[in-house]
Length: 373
Image (tube, rainbow, N blue to C red; front, side, top):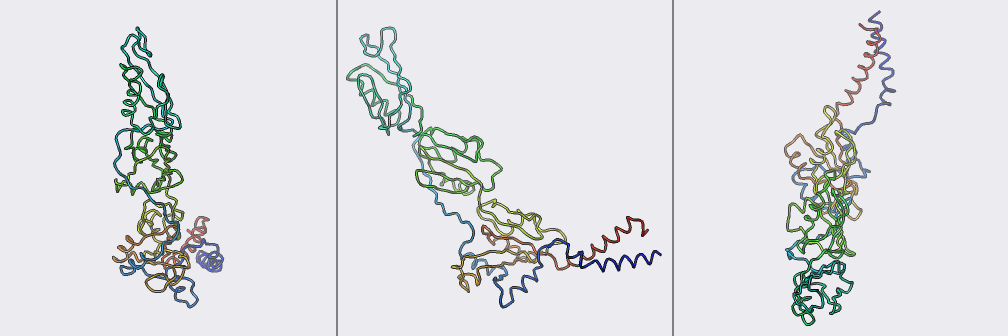
């Protein structure tokens, strides 16, 4: 009886095998399938094996996907002082020891003129003097000018000046930091990184954070990685600038026998095929074929130029063999473009493993039912 049930189960499993296979989830193709298709006369894609010789050739081909085209302003040293702009508020303390002073009394030898807003034309109003232009002056130069202007009327007067930065001497830190807001510029040596530090630093949740500087009608951009690697690019800010910090918008896709099938944001300015595999979780153990890491990319029609100037087809499949030294080094140097599809193919023996699993499932059911002991 036991022998009969065993053969019955085997026969039933063979009968149901086609139907079971049709219900299995579709995995990634084997690398041999891609290679076979690329050799067909009507193949609509070009196939390239990536090696040391191919790397410099592909590097000269046009870029694909979303490319960063914003320029950035070089940094330079600024003055350690601020200059007065319209919208700033000045507080004047005027001292006069003269008993017949026009400004002070016998008991109070100092008068204070608080929160005098610099007008749009750069002037402030002084008693007995009228409008005085202080725009573009440092606080120290403005103090001297105001005192010299006041001397014909009040010869013994001495002036002190304090300034509170207005909109013309402030910048906006809009997003991507712990504390966004409007920040006054302490001097003309205030840089982008100084502003970001004042805002509490960049959010750790952002992948490869990008800096956008809006100045008037122009937008400038760079990455934090590039700025940290080259401090000379830490550009000076101007009053009215707006700074955004945002996540890199470039991405690649992972598919097949990778650790995770998903859309992945670039984690650095330049990502290699090895970087991409690390982000995607590597290969699935026992399922992936390390000889068949594929990069699928689509070039514009204008890029087609058979030979070394461009690909043979718009659709291109690059293949990397990670079981060889040349393949491993090439994977570290092959650059991933935005929009690329990184696909780990399945091992050719995976089909046999799938059939074996089907038999195992059937016998497991019978065993749990107590038919086979």
